[in-house]
Image 1 (cartoon, rainbow, N blue to C red):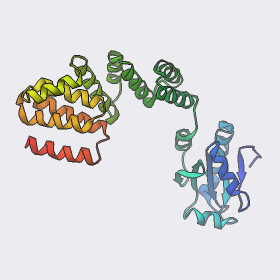
Image 2 (image 1 turned 60 degrees about the vertical axis):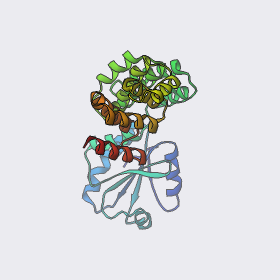
Image 3 (image 1 turned 180 degrees about the vertical axis):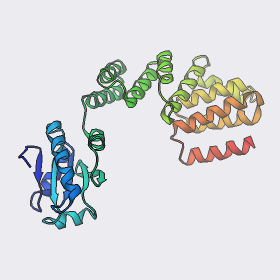
Image 4 (image 1 turned 180 degrees about the horizontal axis):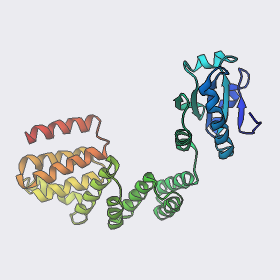
Length: 281
C-alpha cells in the first residue's frame, strides 16, 4: 500500500492516540488479516477513498493477527470489520467487504460539510433571537445542500418564529410527510387560530364564565399550545371533544398535533392519548 498522510497502521502503542484524532475528523478503523480474501478486496477501495477525501477522515488499519488485543477489546469476531469513530467513540460499523457506495454513505453521514457549519451558526443566532441572521445562514446552507430536509425544517422553524406563516406553509407542503413536518403543520394551525383570537387572559375568563363557548375554548387551547402549555391545551381540547360534536374532529386533530409536537411519547402523551381514546369510544 502506498504511503499516505491519511492512512495509518495501528499497534498497541499508537492506537489510543489515533482514536483521539477522531475528535478532529472521523477515524475509520479497518480490522483485517493477511489471509482474509475479502479484506484484500476491500483494501484498495478504502485507500482510494482516503486519498479522495484528502483528510476529511483518517483510515486506521489493524492487523488482527499482529494486534489481537485491539480486536478483542472491540469484540471483533469476523473480518473485515469496519468501525467508524467520532469524538473518541464508535458511532457506526460495517461487516464484510462492502461496495464503495455503501462506504461513501457511511462516511458522508459523519464528515462535516460546509452546510453543517452554517447550520450550527444559524442555531446559535436563533438562540440569541437573531432570526434574520439565522434565516440568512440557513438559506446559505441550503444553497450548498439544496436537498437537505433537516435544513428545510430549520428554515420552517425560523419562518414560524418570524411569523411568516405563508412562506412556512408553502415550504412544509413541498416536503415529504414525516413526524417533524406534521408537528410543524400542527403548530402552524395553532398560530393561525391564535392570530384571530383574543388574549389568553380574556379567553380564560370567557371559558370560566361560559364553559359552553366552544370557539373560545378552541382558541384558548391553541394559545396554550403556542406558549408551550401543552397539558393545558390538551385538557381544553379534550373537554371540547367531549362537550361539542361540532368541534369533535377539530379537537381530535389538535390533540394529535400536540402528540406529534411532543414526539409521540412520554407520560403526558400516553395519558391524554388514553383519555382521548376513551372519550371517542
